[in-house]
Amino acid sequence: MGINVDVHMICDPIGAFPARVLPPGYRFRAYRPGDEITWTAIQRAAEPFFAIEETLFRQEYGDDDGILSERMVFVESADGTPVGTITAWWKDDWQGRGEWGQIHWVAVHPHHQRQGISGAMMTEAMQLMQRWHKRAMLGTATGRVWAIKVYLDFGFRPDPKELGDPTILAGWRAVDAQIHHAGLTAIHP
Image (cartoon, rainbow, N blue to C red):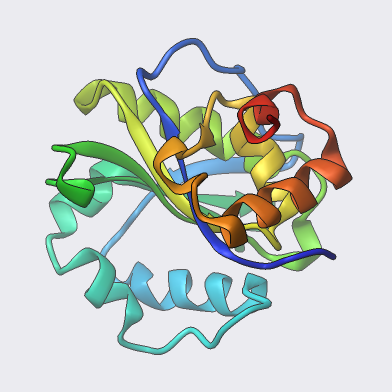
């Protein structure tokens, strides 16, 4: 699996990105009041690295249902079961670099992974992101290799400010050894 280290990726500016669609039998829907329970269940099912606490949703998003309904998207299966979620969020002043859009808390239930849902969710979130932001960032971990591949496909790159850290650089090189993506050229001397 390689080294699992927390990293950031940036897309500055937001440019062209793939127009991926959901596979047959799935549909998007916006956040609805009460979906914090749905979000928590999807995150718990999909998260391999740490426990998802009951309080995490409100800690991350607050309680403004209007903003959440504009920025948080769920994917449902044909029977109406929520199976994925993504949010086009923001940071007012990320690391002292001003305002950034943020791809936040991307998750697909394990029974529905590897079907193209995350790529379609990224298209949806990036379309939302373009309404409010010129640039975007996200946090992830190098152990999430296939998620990173999707982010790279959408124009996100390793944050150059982090590449001076030998542990982070080693994590990126471990990712590159698995996926050999052209978006990782900055990690090579």
